[in-house]
Length: 336
Ligand code: NAD
Ligand code: WQD
Image (tube, rainbow, N blue to C red):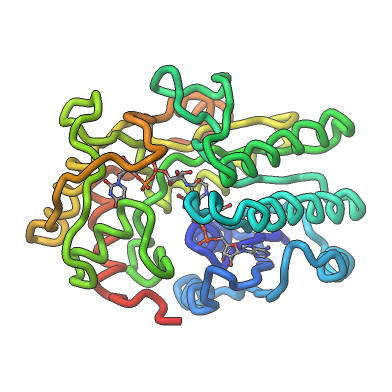
C-alpha cells in the first residue's frame, strides 16, 4: 500500500482519488491541522473504495513507528506540511519544526523499515526569482522566505540521503500553481481564513463571500502588466504523482521534476477565464504590487514528459469551470 502524508488536504485528497482509480491501496497520515476528514469520505464515495485515515502527526516518531511496523508500505507520497508564505515569515520556527523536523522523522522511519521510495511535494518557489522563463530543473535554487527554505532544505536532505544510500528512489516534484478541483465538484480546495492565493480568493469573490479581488500590480513587465504564473489543474497534478510512482524505480536516483503546463497565464487572463465560467464578471481592481512577488514564472515541463510520460492535459477553461463547480456547490467548503 501507498502511505500518503497530508492526504486529507487539497492536493493529497485529489491524489488519493487518482491512486485508488489506478488500483493502489491508500493509507493516509494527516493531523487535520489544515483539512477536514470529509474530503476523504467523499473520495471514498466517488471511487467506491476505502481510504484508511490515521489521524496523527509526522513529528510523532512513535506514531510513525506503529504505522510502518504494522503495514506493508511500498512507497510514500509526502504532502504533509504548512504552506502559507506570509505565516512562515511571522512564525519561522513553526515551519522549520513542522516541515523540516517532520520530514526528518519520516525519512528516519522509512529508512528503519527499508521503505526507500519517496515522492516529495516540492514547489516552484525553490527557483526564487528565476533569471529566465520557462524554468528548467537545472536552474539555480534559492529561498525568498522561510516556507521556501523548508522546501529547499528538504530537497537538499533528500539529495544527501540518496548520496549516503543510493538504493533510495526519490522524485522531487516541483509544483507550479495548482488550481481547479475534481470534475464532480465534490472535492476541492478549502482554505481557512482569508485566502492568500489568487484562485481561492477570486472564487470567494465570485460566490459573494468577499466584495472584490485585489490584483497585485498592473505595472509588471508582462503583456498586460499583471503577474504571470503557470496554473496547473489539480487533477493533472494528481495524475503526475501516479506517473511518478510508476516510474520511480526507473528514475534511478533523487530527481527533481517540474509539474506545470509550460504556459504562462496573467492574473487578468485568469480572472477573465473565471468570469466566463461563472457567467458574470468577477469584480476586481488593480492595486499596488504585493511584497515578494515576481513578474513571471512558468515551467519547462519537458523532463516530466520524457521521464514520466506525463503531460498536463487540462487548460484554463477546465481549471476555471471545475474550480467554480466546487465553489458554487460548496460555498463554505467542507464547513469544518
Ligand atoms: P494542504 O494544507 O491542503 O495539505 C497539507 C496537509 O498536510 C493538510 O491536510 C494538513 O492537515 C497536513 N499536515 C500538515 N502538517 C502535518 C503534520 N505535521 N503531520 C501530519 N499532517 C500534516 O496543502 P496542499 O495545497 O494540498 O499542499 C500539499 C503539499 O504541496 C504541501 O507540502 C505544499 O507545501 C506543497 N505545495 C503546494 C502548493 C500549492 O499552491 N497548493 C504549491 C507547491 C507545493
Ligand atoms: C499568483 C498571482 C499574485 C492573490 C504562491 C507561493 C508558492 C506556491 C504557490 C506553495 C501573483 C496575484 C494573488 C490576490 C493577486 N505555494 N494575486 N491577487 O505567489 O505565484 O505562489 O503559491 O509552494 O510558494 O508563493 O501564487 O496565487 O499567491 O499568486 O493579484 O489576491 O496572482 O500577485 O501574480 P504565487 P498566488
